Length: 212
Ligand code: URA
Image (cartoon, rainbow, N blue to C red; front, side, top):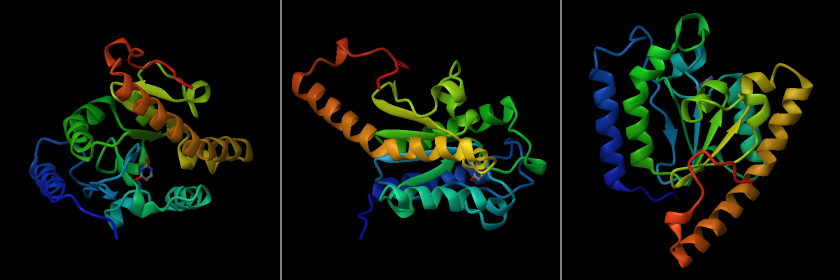
């Protein structure tokens, strides 16, 4: 049974309510897809924006891409309910078009707050938009599967599952990056444990530095 931090539960409920009631947000004709999963997770997955199925079910990654995500999680021995999954934009853009910069900006304070509350050690971004939200200069083909230090967290950009579904080569890349996740996380845990023991944080690597 997954233990629940009641303070986090209340804070996330309050955040969801504020999102629901914020009449200034764009895309309000679509349903709110807040995110779901283990709020005490070490690993937070962040996608782009809900699609048609997600809009209908009000849950992130429940379509074909979501099925692939579930399969990959299972493949590396993780369970979907053990991690938390959300998006940078919390409502579906019409016809699944790319989210606009102003839509990403409008939802940003809510994602920032959601990350602060959940406080994961590792953020895995799915696709170019979620990656560039954190690393504006990064390129998905060059940087997916690498690990970046982002303040005190680790950020690992990987391909979007929908991209992986478009061809064998992308699928192989997606799978390979997924398979690297447990090792990347293990390395990060031992690095942070070492850093804590030595208390040398102020001399640590710069933000956005590639680690391994
Ligand atoms: N694509 C995303 O980026 N997010 C979802 O929730 C579904 C599809």
